[in-house]
Image 1 (cartoon, rainbow, N blue to C red):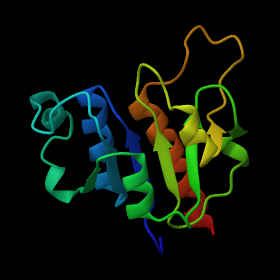
Image 2: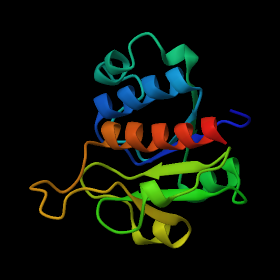
Image 3: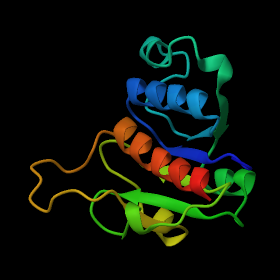
Length: 154
């Protein structure tokens, strides 16, 4: 991969999800960006436990807000925001090196202003699914590995 991908967690709330995503980033070489406020302390035991001993291998960045993250990562990149139900299918999205994948807080999803500044994509699920969405860490893994699959072929 020529240029790593960026995973952005907008105001994450559940420490084990963030820890699992940190581990995912350590395994794939992606940067992890955390936008405050967080629903936990970075020193949280559950966060560290979920990330195991991989934290030293994670390129992690904290940002005070959305604007700071956009500035730090770069507005010229492709920014994709995940939505539970609306947007272009993940399978129809053509990813490029350096793309930014944005995921919302577990209980409320991303606010409208984030979708206004990004391309909205969704992971296809059955129309009559009895749940609102996938778990955050699972959604992140599915999306990231589809992007990596495409970049490996390109």
